[in-house]
Image (cartoon, rainbow, N blue to C red; front, top):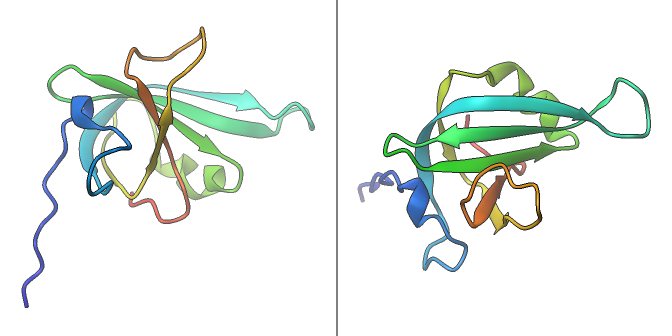
Length: 112
């Protein structure tokens, strides 16, 4: 039995009510910032990214908790990456990083 390759999904088509909810995207990190957790000064509470798809669409990514140390060294502005196995959540609030209706959240099985 042969394995089928998962095709890249355009960022504009990402939505949590998709039939499969397994996506693979190829993007460039155009903006990256860290913020403090508010508990211990100097501790990183999270990393947010703005990703750019080759068609011009953008989406925000949130990395929290123990996942920060797992991915931090592999991330940087200008780097291209392929992401799989992530969760989508509504992109709500006044201060939105992109107009995309959803954000990507990393979880323990993300692919680098």
